Image (cartoon, rainbow, N blue to C red; front, side, top):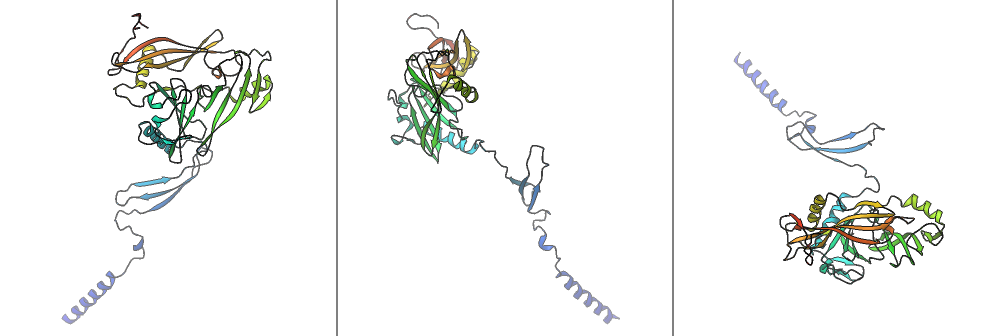
Length: 368
């Protein structure tokens, strides 16, 4: 009997040994982390007609935490701005303004931005007391450019291209009243009784800049009453007044003039020029760029820096300015230089506290 029991026990031990060495066929598919999850791919189909599109995404599940990271690729509509390039461009522009990097001038090669010169008076940008800026896409490629304007209304355009910042200079007569779509107006003489003026568009070919003419008008008086004294050209071709009006209404009527804001190359005060103008805007109750009109005239209201802080004022002298334009033209009021510029009101914004006080005329002692 004892022998029989011993034999049975030996047989049971042998069978147990062999059963431990058997491998389950699905063991290779088991996650070794013990959380029952693994890498997987998912395909998501969205019902057509609901404004969305089919997309495929690859889902990676992080071992042990039950969460997943998705990398879904969605098509970007043509013409949409690239946030990454715009962000990089903005950082490069700001670095150039701080003198941390150079810019590539079309005439001088690589220079510091402060050494760039405005064309009409040959003044270095770094020597200009009052500067303004506008940030907009001038050529319609979805990437914004940086326009800097001097007190004499000359302009320097900064463009980010191929990892570099390029600069281009414009004379105030050949480039004024920039529109938000990047088109701009020009005039060959300030004698509006005998001049040619027009509207053009900036274009780029690599790092080179070009100008494409949209239209031009040869005029013999500041006004256009349809009396036959003006000559009209569209894209370089001579047209009648009626053809010009049709073209302008179809292609240019919705253009809006760009509004510039103050730019500080360096600021040693707690309140910047731009902040001073915002304080003045709230104080006066209107925004820079507001339009008003009466009796054949359009008034563009602007808030501008007239003087930077100094030892005497310790504040920004800010002006409430009117630019007057004639409405007796066939195209935009802004297609001619303003007939007059008037500073209507002034005040002082403290450069340290931002408080507002009246500006007192030094010679007369009167408030403005």
